[in-house]
Amino acid sequence: MKQTFSFLILILVVSSIHSQNVISEPDWSQDGKSIVFTRGSNQSTDIFISQLDNRNEKQITFKSGSNWNPAWSPFGDKIAFISNQNGNPDLYYYDLVYDTIIQITDSPEIEATPSWWSAEKLSLIRFNPKDRSRKSLLIDLNGNEETMVPDSSMQCIYPRISPTGDLMVFGGKTLNSQEQFHLFKKDLSSGEVTQIEDLPIVSYNPSWFPDGKQLAFINQSSKEVSSASIYSYSLETNQLTQLLECENGCYHPRVSPDGNEILYLDGWGKDCKGIFLLNLVSANSKQIK
Image 1 (cartoon, rainbow, N blue to C red):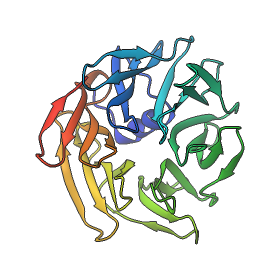
Image 2 (image 1 turned 90 degrees about the horizontal axis):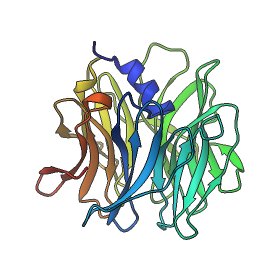
Image 3 (image 1 turned 120 degrees about the vertical axis):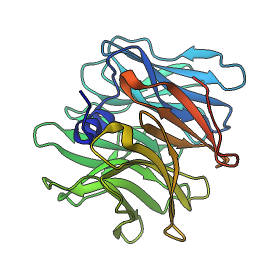
Image 4 (image 1 turned 60 degrees about the vertical axis):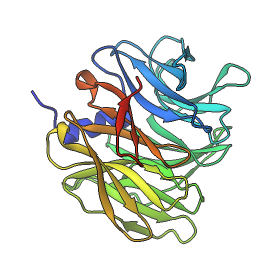
């Protein structure tokens, strides 16, 4: 039986725990020489670091429960992630210098998809399972927070702040509507929010290019998860370009620090073939995990 996009979005945002032992959620190191990713099952998911030149791996989480949504910091010294090791999905980070894990938040709600804004601040989503509302928050390493999308009528997923720090892009939809998620940008100075694409049926999981002028993101054009493909969007020309289609759907694109490659998943869950690398110059892909 095939999953529908509404179910898939919930799984991608709230958790990345899979039904079998698979790898997922790759992200780049600041120097582009390593990646971080998750590996696990529905019982437990852990986070690993792998060097691209020799593929040596290091596991960085060992607690009971699951750990997911890893995000490497811009200075390369920390990896933020979500963990339910203390019962509820909260925000943590791993310090690569001191080889230690620090808990940042302790919320009764569900937190997901952290993304670094600066060396000391992250954006993330906080999900309330009672009313199914989502808030986009900016949180520093001491747990101090502010709301990034204060409009209570708008649901938000995958907030990503631009490398220049002046824009935030996110998947958004009107609360309790029958609409699906599309990409919006928010000017962090004026507060103006603008929809930037209207592709069928749902778009989400954006990743900035290093110049802050382009995005890569996922668009799912039908209710079948295999329809998910990778697009790019130019903020200067408003041009949309389909970059890649995958047999079982493409997921979780992450643009490299030099802007020349994109990490992505070919398939999801039991259908995931692994982590691949798309070269934007040659348009060739290769599997790396």
